[in-house]
Length: 107
Image (tube, rainbow, N blue to C red; front, side):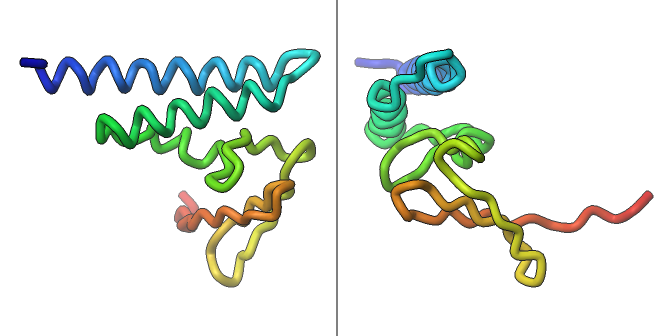
């Protein structure tokens, strides 16, 4: 039988590596959006199949509708809804990701 802990660890490493490759590709002089999306889609499939959660910082970096990396100014816009306490990332496909934040107390 498979050692479940080892399988999940390997899956987590593969997810991290795929997302890193997608970031590298997006920052290259000639980015390939199709390949970026393929890497993100594959990372999401691995996450779902092996029931491994995506890293928290990585979940905010891609569109859940079209699997493209969210790069402000290139393929998404960022708006701050300060009255409601969240940030809105609107992807070029039209999908909106909303992330809540908390105000940190002044020191």
